Amino acid sequence: MHDHYRYTYDDINSTYQFTTKNNISYLVAFVKDETFSMISSREIDKVFQLVVDKTTDHKELMDLFVFKTIEHIIYSFFRSTSNSLIYVCSGQNDAAFKRHKVFSRWYVRSSYRENIVKFDNVIRIENVVLEKYEVYTSYLIHKENINYKDLTALFFQLEDVLNSSK
Amino acid sequence: MLYMKSKQLNKALIIESITKLVKDKELVRSYIKGQISLQEVKDEGIKFARPL
Image: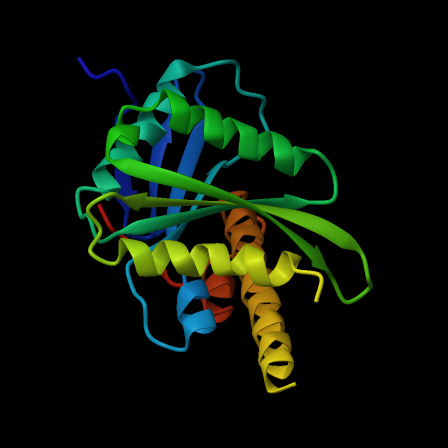
């Protein structure tokens, strides 16, 4: 018996999906991300943004199987060591910080952390109407990724340039 | 001077890329919640992947 929910890929919706014992549906999307390509001016593939959300706003009670299912999806994703993952949380209230903390807690409790390294950045952005907000970014990369040094350097460049005062 | 200009350009580019990253996530979340269609998401240049 599995310790996580069974998940499937839906070709029509282009997402992975699973339903909890409380009949709450989750969709998990991997979006091809071009952030590193944009800032380095060269094509960098196999970087994806992870988006996980419920299809409704129903409140989910603590369900360990949800964590285990996401853990299994991320573990499977990194069977290809050249894949890497960006997870972002943003907003002008503390909801973004709380989501970031949940993701970090999942990582700390995960079995894949033995081979997968997570880096965190907090990036401060000012939008066109001069409102400031913070973007909590996490980057997950396999220790055996052959481009490990280059990719992690690009990730830290995001914070270094934006948060520098000059 | 040239370095400062380069850094400013780099900063603008990074702001643009981070803004896109955040926007992409919000669009996908709206799609997951059924607020916008898959076609609308794709029209914004978002490419879904099946990496597993």
